Amino acid sequence: MKANVLTVTDGRTDKTYVLPIDAGTIRAMELRQMKEGAEDFGLMTYDPAFMNTASCKSSITYIDGDKGILRYRGYPIEELAEKCTFLEVAYLLLNGELPTDNQLKEWQNEVKHHTMLHETTKKFLEGFRYDAHPMGMFVSTVAALSTVYPEARNVLDAENRRRQIVRLIGKVPTIAAYTYRHSKGLPYVYPDDDLNYTGNFMNMLWRMVEPKYAAHPVMARALSVLFILHADHEQNCSTNTMRAVGSSQADPYLSVAAAAAALSGPLHGGANEAVLRMLDQIGTKENIPAYIEQVKAGKLKLMGFGHRVYKNYDPRARIIKWAADQVFRVTGRNPRLDMALELEKIALEDEYFIKRKLYPNVDFYSGIIYQAMGFSPDMFTVLFAIPRTVGWLAHWDELMRDTEQKIARPRQIYTGVMERHLPANRPAIQASAAV
Image 1: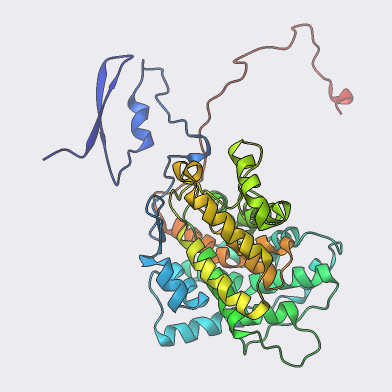
Image 2: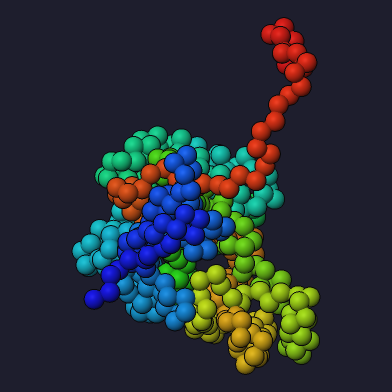
């Protein structure tokens, strides 16, 4: 029987080391024993952008990028999107199992109980300029909740953590809706506990003078599916940020705000907006072949294709195509969708893209759907942040329970000047002259 170890010979010293292999990994600290001399620090790994480094163990989300597999707690994303509501999936991510009927009813009531914002928080939102970006308002307001719930600092108390988790899941749609209303100069709409999670969000966004807002069931279901697809995605940039900030035992409001700030970047949560800009740049289906040639020549980029993890078709993109079909049956077909379908067809048949494993990702269709539903592009990242809050909190809670984790503190390779000194004749600053 083969030993589950890696045997390494250090060519500098000719010493041999046996490193245990666990779940396809070796402990980076095992390399520290490899030294040229007693005063040597030992070897480190150098891995810019964490291309091949596992920073934690997690039981939440499983991804096989080569096979195009995404599972939450073992359940295929396709089954969850087809058969579950968003709050069911949120419960699954946080608790490890799908809720029973009674657990789901209790969970829904808990979340609804925490949808209201403190009136002072509304006044905080009113301090933003009329043209402030919704994502900046969202990040700032979530962070401000840290001052409203100071008990959240007790992050090692499991019951307290759960209370803050439910609060955040209940309040982020309200904050998101209020950022939209603020940007439009519209009065805020209070949550309606008679509506489901996505229906209530749409009520707070779009209710005007009608006594009761009823979201179109197809649109509300499509939004729920989109929320499920965006709820978690393993150790992405924003989740890694949530864990890094959370490792200092910062409270969950500040940690979620930091994660949302990471999400706001165009290389992360803002990618679907870039797809819309690309489709507008192409203009018509007839211009697609010429655009493809420009991409091959390295003059332009094909937005919405390729992924750091997936080297196959992003499973979420398939589901979003289905959701797009449902939405456009209600809103009428968007010319951008026809362009996107044609662009995908050409790219998937072209050897250039096949060889590079550039397949459509979740961002390729999501922006088109959001726009068809009535959202402006500056709201896209905020929409992403609502469901991803659940994933961030699931990882944060897991982090708090992980006895192996400490405060995040990566090493570096120093490349600067090793040592130098100020001129010996330079006088010391006297107290009276200090500035």
